[in-house]
Image (cartoon, helix red, strand yellow):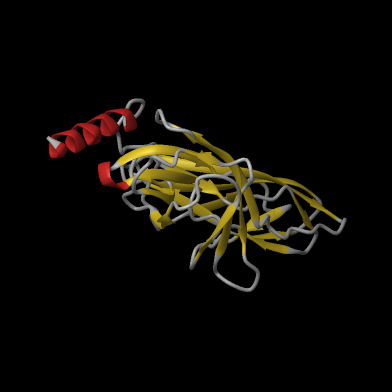
Length: 228
């Protein structure tokens, strides 16, 4: 009788945990310039970076075609290095061919100016956690680079609340909020109320687009957040 009761409780939890979930591990392929700038000082250079994830959220390295709408204003190398040639505006375009044969592009408009421009890229991201189940999960966060390392610090803010009745809850970085495949596991969730932090080793701040909360025992999604 005791074993039957435990089994019934687990079944009820499983049904509740996935009440609002749709199991689908496919997403739209995504390609973007991850450190876009709007201005650059005449005669300066700036290295652009990109991220391409396929239709299951896996990060793919592929050939990028770079071009400038006006090379008399700004040129861009095959590796995405912008060189400011003369004052004015130029559109920098990056294009790839996806694994499904589609062309995906991203563009930025760059103004070349005589003014001194500081193009140190943003080393901090933020976002809001939301529940995707019947369990409480909410709060905001800041993701930032740890200086002089290749590590990140994920700070969950004081407004964070999560149901403590969630067994086996883990937190991930991912490019596909529908699955933990190709995701980076951070660790098991041990704090369910208030501020706390995680250190994520060997990770660039532009590697992932989302945070994912996942119920490991039942392999279902509990919540997510977009990294802004």
